[in-house]
Image (cartoon, rainbow, N blue to C red; front, top):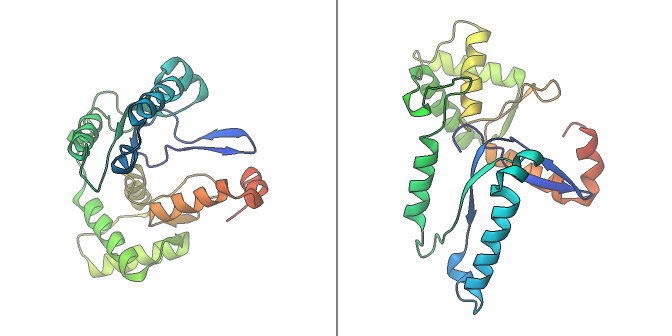
Amino acid sequence: MPQKIWCSCGFIDGEEYTVAPGSSVILVGTHHDQIVKLKNYRQLSENFQSIIYKRFMDTSQSEKLGYPKVLESIEISSKTGYNIKQLCTLIYDIAGQLLVPNSKDQNIFQQRIPAKYIYLEEALEEYQINKKISMLNDKEYQELIKEISQQKNHVQFRDYVELQQATKWLHENGIIVHFEDTLLSNYYFLDPQYLAELLAQLIASEQTNGLSRHGNSL
């Protein structure tokens, strides 16, 4: 979703860990074109939907466990196009209900965004694609921003505070990832998918369970 990209749950040594509780989520079942071939497809689909509802959509349980808000679940197939349009509609409708962070009534679609934020987004995406670099430390990030500012007059920031505001906007919209946590604040992930895959590997690997639990540096 636009504001948060961290809305997954993982299991480590039988313990459940949740990220971004309260975020709006759509559960998407892929490969419908393969599953529909099964003789008991309808029963399987109904069973899965029942499990999803009880575990994630029953608010009395999901809020207690700190799960994200799972608003819908849908089966799709990118191969046949099954339910793709419906998924697009769901995303648009749910995104349209989101509010600007720290706002009680301002819709996210009504948010006024400084043009320099958009130019910075484009410049960072271009850099990441061309250089194939997924992560920068704070010094490297500052140097990159300085270089971008020299090349593009419309990407100028008055001071470090204004740059951090732009960085926070990029993070909240899933364009980059930058945590304010003391242990992670020195890192800027230009490719959120890279970090998601890295975390998935850490959670899945039994050899790194100790590393994950104790919060050691990557």
